[in-house]
Every structure is written in C-alpha cells, then in structure tokens.
Length: 384
Image (cartoon, rainbow, N blue to C red; front, side, top):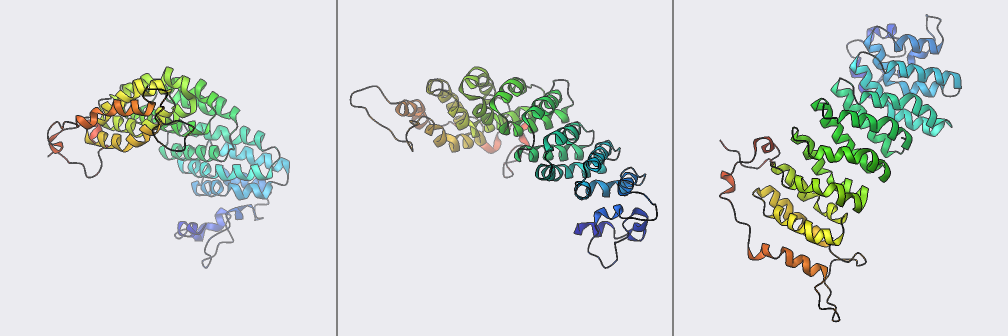
C-alpha cells in the first residue's frame, strides 16, 4: 500500500469526496476499505461498497477493485453479506475501464487463497464467481488484462485451486477456441503459450483427450512461425505427460517436421528438448529413428543449432542407459556377443568423429532466414 501515497500525491485534497477521510498528509498510506466507514450518506457498508464500486469516477472503482480482499474479510462472517460482495465482484468484472478490470484480476489469486482457507464452501463459490472472470479475461480485448488473467490462471493452477472439472469444462474450451485456425494471431500465440504452460499441471487424460490433438495441429501451423517455435520449445513436456504410445503414434511425425523446419530457431528448440522426447520412446525407436534425427541436428547448417545439439548430446546418450542403473556405463556380456544398446548408439553416432561437420563457408557470411534472425543470440553477426 505504500505506493498508493504517491498515487494520491496530487489529489489527496479530494479524498474526502471519495470516502478516504482517514488519509492525512503525514500518513505513509491509507486504509483501502476506509470507504466502508460511516459517513454523511447514511448508507450501510454494503450500500457504500455498491456506491463506490459503480461510481462514475474511475479512481473510485480502481480503489475498490484493489481492496476487494480486505472487503471480503470485512464481510466474511455473514453468509448473506459474503454472497452480496461476490455478486458485486462479478458485476465489477464487466467494468468498461481496462485498468479496473486489471486491478480486479490481480486480486483474484489472493481472494481465492483467502476463500480456500476460510470458507467451507470454497469450491462452489470459487467456481461460480471467480473462475468465469478468469476465463472471460483470457479473451479480453485489452492486452494488459489478458496478461494479468494468464498470470492469475497459472498461480491458481500451481496452488491447486482449480478443479479438474473447471479446467475441462471452462478453461480448456477457451484455449481451444483461441487456437482455432481462424483465431486472431495475437490471441492465438498467447493461447498456445499458456496452453503449453498449463499442460504440466494437468492430468494425462485431460491432456491426451482435450489438448493433444490441437497441439499436433499447431506444430504444423504454416502461417505463424511463433506458434511452431512455442510448440517446439514445449515438445518434451507434452511427450513426458502423454507417455510412450501417444508420443510414438502422434507426436513423433510432428517432431521430425519441426527438426527440419526452415527456421533455425525452431530446430534449435528441438535440439534442446531432445532428451525429454527420447525418454518418452521405446529403445527401438530411440535407436532407429531418433539417432539419425539427432545426427541431422548436430550436422545442421546453423552453428546455433549445432551448439544446442552438442550440448544435448550427453543427455541424449544417457537415455540409452539401462533404467535400473544409476549412471551411464557400458557392459559386455561374455555369453552374448551381440552389442549392447549403448554400443549400438555410439556406433550410430561414430561417423561424427570420423567425418566432422563440414562448414558451409564462413559463419559470418551466412544468412539465416529473415523471420528467424531475430531469435539469434545478441552476439550473433549482423550483415550490413
């Protein structure tokens, strides 16, 4: 609240009109719920809340939104008053001023934690009043409001406050709608990013039945390279969650396409998640398909892709080790002359030692694809 004193620096003379009559020039801050105190209007506390929550003055509405947690604490002892406040919150969420909506959304995680700790009927109240606000703000026309709702959604998931039913019936359908081919580009890119973040907090069944088909489609988005790049960066997480069968049947073809994408930033992202993908496949697929694919990355024309692949080489080789062992080591079975899986892996990758990567000219004279050049590290050469 200390920052509020700066906010009021030029206008504290008028605070009596706003209900903040306990603010003084020598105070470091104010009590946000001061507007609930008895004044000259003869209104009840709930009546004053209603008055300032829907005031024509944007400042009043912002302060009410910022103080919603304290307001709920004031009225939490009475069930009827609590319901009235929650209904006021729901109405305030439709405010036409983006700053009010953003202020309100910033308070939602704190309000949810308070309700979780103090209300026996938390799941019902949270699902009825707050979840619809979070979901609706994911499609808000204001960028700041959308970003705030995305951050709030992640916090709610991390804290385990969103139920499986709400995720499946309210959140996921909106993410799927925003990632439709016909969706606005900005909305689509944001939705893909948030979908890839929430997937790590969902169950395998939810991911496999609701999000996996759309993720596969997004990996092949030919129009927006930003979408493909987000998919490539999060490919390993999807593989880890859905397991071996779905990875080999549905995701592997998409991974091959991404590894040969025309933009080097996408291929680099594939190299960085290669170990997680490898861990989600069978030894046969790992040896027969992923090893040649990895060689193509480690021999890539872009030095940034090669560098990422070399950095992932040890981790990729470690996925061939016996799962029961504590570390990577090679064994020789005297009764079996067939090479071990690790030996076969090294044999597959051995051409890299005898045939080092052939540079395609001086790296500083090579030109990367235009759209992907922005992904180049800061010290990368710039052609002039």
